[in-house]
Image: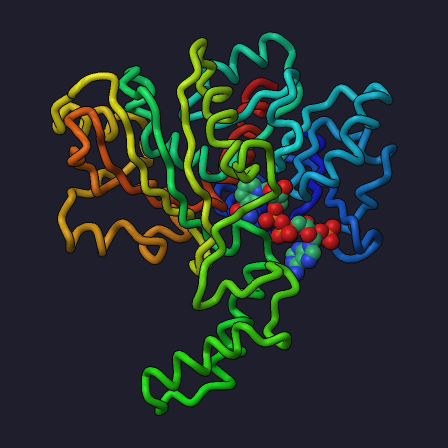
Amino acid sequence: MKVGFVGWRGMVGSVLMQRMEVEGDLPKHDWTFFSTSNAGGQGPMSSVLADAEDLEVLSSQEVIITCQGGDYTKSVYGTLRAKGWKGHWIDAASSLRMDSKALIILDPVNRDQIDRALENGTKTWAGGNCTVSLMLMGLGGLFDHGAVEWVTSMTYQAASGAGAANMKELVAQAGYVEAKTDGSATALDLESRVSELLRSDEFPTQSFGHPLAYSLLPYIDSEVEGGQSREEWKGMAETNKILGMDSHIPIDGICVRVGSLRCHSQAFTIKLKEDLPLDEIEGMIKEANNWVRWVPNEKEATLKNLTPTAVSGTLDVPVGRVRKMNLGPQYLSAFSVGDQLLWGAAEPLRRMLGILEERQ
Ligand code: NAP
């Protein structure tokens, strides 16, 4: 297929390139790589970069994959469709997710919907929000069995979730502190010096706008009505769209940026529709897909397997800390970690391209 790729050097795009290389996807297609900042420059696979605003070159693609971001989608997608372009648009950004013509893709969870949409002529495919996709990869079995009445998700989201420049800024912030402190000072002097550095005007905060290293940021994305952040709003809206439910499951929580580089973690409180035994719950979670990993609720197994350090760069989605809470027998706790650049972003896009190729 003739495939155009916009956003190949960003955080999600470079992980997608890596995955396609590992899986041998690249030689299967005729690629054009686009750039918003360096058209005419050198691209991957010895290519010359096309201009990402050039509607003629874009229109000549059978498939366009974009990991460029929502502003790009908003500026190009509508015009391209209005000009009559009938190709497949596969997008990592959130802009089109709730569009009635678009399906949110997460094939281990909603392959049947993808197949139906293909039959019905759908041509617009959006990867889901990273925490939503990772929650469904981890807890999909409970939703499949209709066991969930509602969920709260408190998130611990990695710096790379905000993009390449932000992830680099987190490392730069830590480096700035390291360079300006004396490790042999007393603990209290060290804390006081670090706090002073974090609050100073010189501290590098161009991308995040605030210090993240040695701190955290309990607000992700823009403000929406009702006091939620947009990231929090996506939890309920996108989950229910992906599951294609008739009745909506309430989902809410607080989304927090933390100082991990890669992988989003989530602490869940799940209200079950009925008091199910723990071994049944374990079975439902484990059997949902090939990537979910059950972690027994024991200290050593948890600290070894249920951390961003253990999970970064893998497709595993471990779920642990599962127990009945003091709140009552229908209230379950769970903790999950997943690589937001893989199942939370690049992998569903890569697999959608594979599904289109199968259909050729
Ligand atoms: P990103 O790293 O900021 O990359 C987006 C674009 O920024 C690149 O394609 C590149 O465009 C440009 N860019 C500017 N400075 C760069 C630098 N230092 N290194 C690399 N590229 C740079 O954004 P992203 O995190 O990949 O996100 C892309 C889309 O995916 C967004 O809509 C985001 O919401 C969504 N998403 C992200 C994640 C995640 O974990 N990051 C997860 C799910 C969904 P040019 O080459 O044209 O200059």
